[in-house]
Length: 469
Image 1 (cartoon, helix red, strand yellow):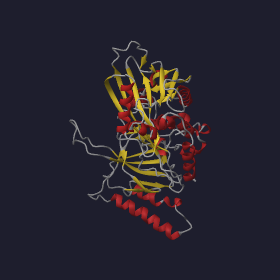
Image 2: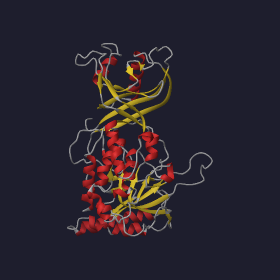
Image 3: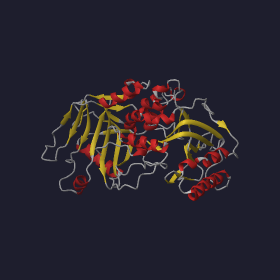
Image 4: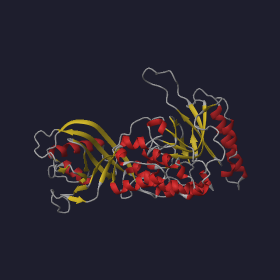
């Protein structure tokens, strides 16, 4: 029954999209997920959590809790075939005993701590922090169970402290919807904290196609925003960590498992499901640099959770795609972006950078007039088109990104970078300094996650991208 409910959640989450990329996009669909009546089986335990808000040391030679839970997992095995049932139960117990033996070649050390939670979220990007923030809110619990405590949500990622690299953009009206829905969960996402720049107008250029003049501009009276990635990250963080307001806990560790088939993982015993939840091993990173190098080895924590949500991105090692339904292979969105400081000494009109109005955000510039007619470069651009995406920031700072919306096979990063530079040179835009560079890779399409697996994919791990692409 719980597997069916988990499948329902996966289907509902995968059906909700927003045009802001898989990370920020997931924030809106997270609300659908968190408010779904099907999450009733996540109701918090009436008693206090065994491990509360901190990890508890355990004897490294005591895997009995995994063994007992693994052996009780018979309810998810086919009862009509008792021979298969016994052999599968034996297989689970064998896997547990393999885990418990401290073989020198084992990639995981024996656990030195234990933790327990209602929901374990893997990853720490926008999708992970959004779903963790919402599920840990007191408003996430069913209104009928007002006496129940909030869900105990644990977010785990060994790279938790790493800064977010991508630049995120969103239509202003969609951002307002996200903001209002988070507010309904008792969590504020203030514009002053989360929006870096807003433009009241959005421009597009499609000249050179369908007899459209190259200089013709299509202006959309729809506002667009650039997310302040550092500010959003803080707002979706716990108070005791980065001054945020979220209520989830953090464990700086990563999973070590890889799904080999539905609900079966390697190394043996690193992730085990049973009728009451899942037990997973998480490993912290050892200090590898600085004064602390070599002082503290990697530690392993055994975590018990009612539900695991994987937000580790498109290259998830836990979420398997459904290969039973035919689906074309994914295309790929590839982009090269740079935050540039421009040399405008010889530019009389400082309100523009080349043809681009600094008071507008340019969503698409698909023109190819910067390539010589009938050249190899022009031919390649016709076969695999790319567009320029322009975010004028303050003074002479502008974010440019040359993007292949979707292609099979993928356009290379080098091709996008070369086209970006060629376009800017043709438009007379002089780059004085590059503050940062971005390389964007997003699989587009492909099969959805298998619906009968116990780990729920969310964000990129669930192939959540804009449906029009």
